[in-house]
Length: 117
Image (cartoon, rainbow, N blue to C red; front, side, top):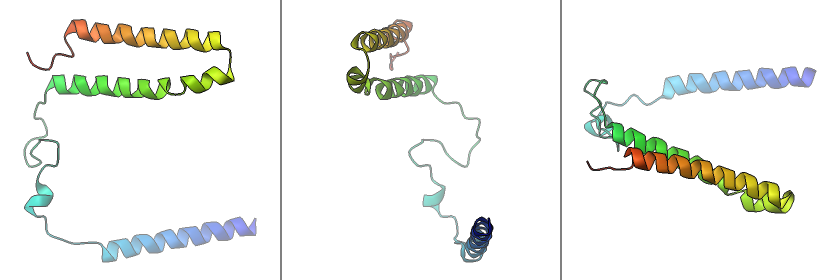
């Protein structure tokens, strides 16, 4: 119990010292044009935050995230074939792929994948 208390006290002391050092030694530099310029986002940081952006860009980003997560769920399927019954893995994999294909065709027929109008 004493060892745990000592560890907590030392941890608190070290974190307190690091925070004080960061505040004292912290960089106090002037803001330059390069620091204030937008980086890969296309928005001007000095204008209003209420600037509208392309809904198509947002939709493509969401679709990308969905299919990116789908890749992480599909990759372990070959490993699951060796660990459990092949029929169950095959059925669940085919059902998962069917759901994804139905979603993809729905987005395609709705026109969400058309970038240029």
